[in-house]
Length: 282
Ligand code: PAF
Image (cartoon, rainbow, N blue to C red; front, side):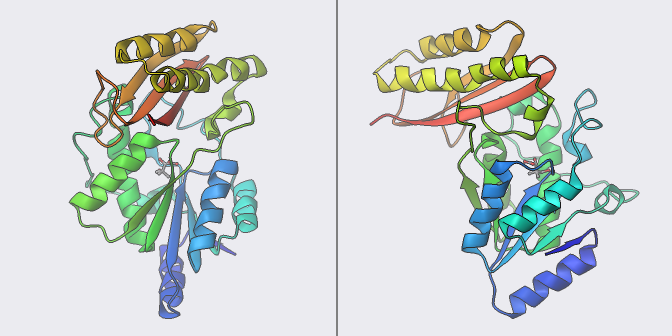
């Protein structure tokens, strides 16, 4: 496996793979890799002839009071995980080469980003869309892999690719969870043992929504209220949102429909966590 900060090298290796007729897969990450990322690289490996992972903590997707400076940077361990998962190349560019002096072009995906994470984290999705489009242009892959954990993110990336005719296939892979239900996240490592126990309220709230809706609850406001109650049960959990939305438009629902997505965001201590669950009514 080659690890390089050089765009020229990335392009050379991708061009060579392409010349051999290999399908090129891309797994964009911000590092601090966990088993969720590993499964993305492994899925990419199983579907593509040449596997590129990127590691870049993207400054433009963090707000001024967010955790950009303390975001975990664990390059050596990340490279080891990528190697073990079957990556052929890891691209880890310097910030100055992604955002050179005078950088002034950003991508804004409207509509789908208005609510939820977009509302709680102004500017976040502009930074995500911009860096993801740049990474797509840099790697020129055939297919890119994202986790369902960042549900709104993968929707906005799909929307961006459709709207701007970006020639890449987007694959969304299932959220990987701890045995007790906690969704894997690079930010889980900020949690103390007591906070980690409280963080379970996110996945429990989603399961509660699923149970109620699958049992025939017709009042979606009541479902949201039940989610809030579960989320707020442990002290020290501050809820940002609890939502039952259309899975394609992210419009908030008033009545149940056959396919829905429940989404939650909450601060546990100083750590902001998100989670979601696709809910089908049989
Ligand atoms: O999901 C992430 O890790 C990041 O938002 C991404 C897609 C790598 C862009 O920086």
